[in-house]
Image (cartoon, rainbow, N blue to C red; front, side, top):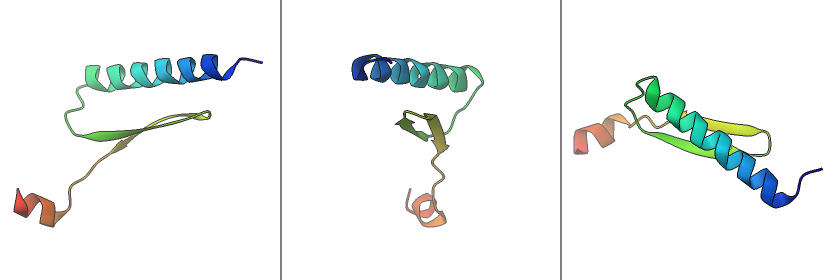
Length: 55
């Protein structure tokens, strides 16, 4: 079984790859990244109508 450091490193590598892939695919919006031992999640951040009106 891998150590905590190795797991953290592999999660970080997977996250970096996911971000690079999204950027290469032309993602222009904002997104949040959530890391877990089960995978990496890129979640789009969608502004509310109020946030858009205030901008």
